[in-house]
Image (cartoon, rainbow, N blue to C red; front, side, top):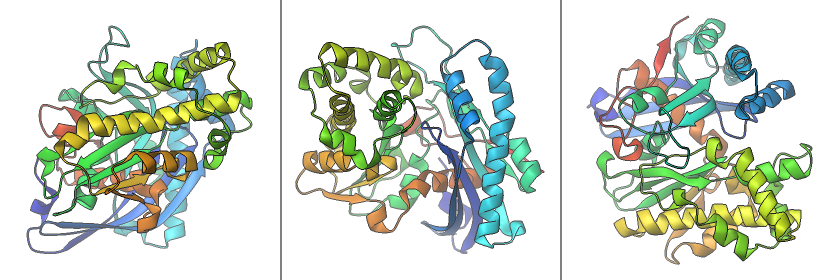
Length: 400
């Protein structure tokens, strides 16, 4: 992979880029304006402005209808592509106005879009299928509405090169968090949890990155089901804290073959979505568990699957000096306490916020970087993370 530093071996160059993201929780669109400074082998990213725009309730409900693969979902997906594109456009506009930076100074918008379906290669639990991925949020619409170039559809090029199309955020992790003397694990917990292992002084080919399994998705699904949609997540992990982990159910859940599969690997709602939640509830009721006991057990699954991933795939390469936690799960006290208690005693445990990084903006920063690499014609995937056969430029460019 051609490193970013080759863009400017001596002269300092600065770029403004916008990154936009909507994750597996389907809450809305996060958008960040980022200043990238590149000089020699150094890259710095400065978050200049960050906004969140919630999806209208009807759009969110219709996205979940598509997830259920109900009749008429093709018609819905077609419409949602443009409707979600308009939400992304509004998020970009709000960000630009709020930041006060001139529009003409922004190089590119990197838009991840909203994933509707993701089928990575080699998942034997799904059955026979064609590896593929689908993100919506029409980029040409965003370009016309904002008057700026837009890079989007980042996953397809990596999959065309034989990769999983994820995790892509490991590229930003490498450039922004690599350290000459400290081995680090960068852990993100969104709907799905993913980690990036950065060996001290290592290069791109040394990066290990993969989805560890469910993040907040299963517990969120339980909360939403139990409250009939009145609550979407377990705020600060209070429901999990008030429940009791059922070891029998937990042991059953940890037998999931995904946790044993070697990286590169990725997963998503197709595996840990509504069907998984319904099966867990069925098992929990047979064991006469309370709602909060099921939530506690699901949240412990997140913790234990993360630690299992470290023990099987990261620690053999070297015990990390630091584990850095970000994403919505970093606000869940049950998860925080669980991971802190299970990592090696000499490993420093940090949250992105403790380092002055807005963890909610972290993935937006990553897609701003991928958008910048796209418009500069540079590769954006890390092959050791995605499993692609070669480095490729990620994304498709749309101009106003």
